[in-house]
Every structure is written in structure tokens, then in C-alpha cells.
Image (cartoon, rainbow, N blue to C red; front, top):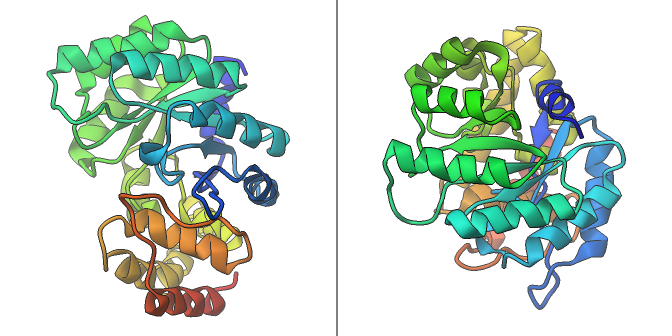
Length: 301
């Protein structure tokens, strides 16, 4: 996919990160994963991110990533597939190249592993990945990888295939500075956990879209909320926030890591056998699964 086409697709509508399906032994389960991807592709997501954060990128072996990307690409039809990418410099470059060889239309560069780094080092890390592939690259600003506006501008000037900026920091002042400074050079994607909770604030900061984790199991509801956001339908947004997203947040906040585990539980509850999460995450308890089931039943869009 051409860089301009991926950039346009990223900003054309709602985005999502499919969970990665595992079998009873914990190995990647391609058949149920493909079925889930085919189902999601029918609900008009503009781009799907394979082996991303909600797809448990952090628990995957590097050699699993291109296999997952290839399976997603085969199942998604015309929907572009962006691959998760990350860790230290050499591994990130190799992952990006492997994802490109597997057919990915772009890569999302998640934060590097463990250590904090100065801006110059973060710049060099991102640039190395951009220089290593021909496909589009999206920066994910969060945790220990927070690039400032002047360094992002430098990367945008030097890397033609840098097409997107995703934010998971929640620093509205910083992200507004970035969007004001770079204008339409990049597509801006909201990336806070349960991004719908922050969507109105990010829209005001110049972010026209976000990645919806709940799209994994309530895609109609996710699209309804996104449509209300873009139409400035505050009454509908308020209703969905109160009826679904705030109760979901209460379940998500019961345990660390549930931002992923609760999504995977939802996928299983709507009939897609995604399997358990991998350690270090833990699955929801039986009581929490019942809470999720009730919430889904009460909020069928």
C-alpha cells in the first residue's frame, strides 16, 4: 500500500486491534483468528492492527508476529493490516522487515523495552525502523517512549514513510502541540486504553480517529459511538458512555492487565473461541465473566 493511501485509511474511520487467538496449549490458533478477522472486517473498520497491544504483542515470540500478520492479511479482504512492532533497536528493525515480508501494509512502533532514553536516542530508534522498510510507520507515544514535537517534526521531515502518530500518554497539551506543529503531515490516532473514554478530548486536539478495543466484540456499538462522535451527537455519546463504557471501565479496573483480558473475555462471550491470555496477564474470574456477559447483553447496538 502506498504511504498516502495508508495515511488516508488511518484517518478514514474507526480502527481496531484484534485479539490474538490461542489454542488450549497456548499456541497461535489461525483458524478461529481468521474467522474473527473476517467477522470484524464486515463492520467497516478502516484499518486493523495485527499483533498489537490488544493482540498481546508483548507476550508473542518474534517469529510468531509475521505468521499472525499473514493470517490477518489473508482474512481481512480489502481492509489494510498494520503489524505491531517494538522492543530494542535491532529487534524492532527485524520485526518491521519480517512484517513487511508477511504482507503488512504498515507497522505500529510500540515503545522499546524497559529503559528510558533521551530524545536523540528515541529519534534514532524510530528512524532506524523507518529506514529499514518501505511500508508506512506509525509512532506510538506512551510510557517510556514519549517523543516531543520538535523531534517528531524532524522525523516527519526525514522519513517519507512516517505516516501516523498514535498517542497513549493522555498529555493533551503535548498532543495539541504536535498536531498544531505538524498539521496534516501525519494522521493522528487516539490510543488511550478504552479510547472512547477520551475521544471527545482528543477530537478537540486534532485527532479524528482512535483504535477501539471493544470493536473486538461489540463492533456495532463501537461504530455507533464513533458515528456519534463525528456527528457531535453528545446525547448518544453520553448514553453509550453511561450504559456501556463506564461499567466496562469498572470491570477493566478490577485487575492490572484487564484492559486486554476483558476484551478477550468479550470476544469469547460473543462466540469467537479466542482462548486464554498468556502470562503475565490473567483471565477474568467466573464472576467477572458473568458481569461482562450481562453488560454485552444489555448493550446490543
